[in-house]
Length: 103
Image (cartoon, rainbow, N blue to C red; front, side, top):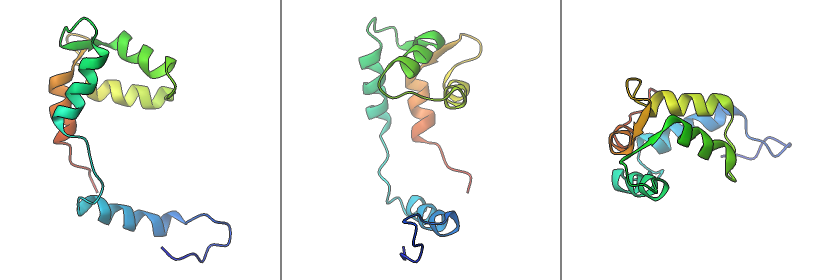
């Protein structure tokens, strides 16, 4: 990217096409389904195969990485089964690994 912005910032109009191309060309590494499952298993100390909405919300607000209410809501809407109120992390990992951005 050119450094024609004297502020040290890059304008969004220049940033977006570079990032979109990098994503389309698979230049940005992503976690595999197995990586995601392994991470959730580490959090699932009872080895239930799922995390509750309360457990996820608690982890997302009380650890070093604090998420906004909107970020938590979006993640829970995508991850949690509305019928059970739980995140079956094997199913979640499959959804994330196969997710295709809409741009």
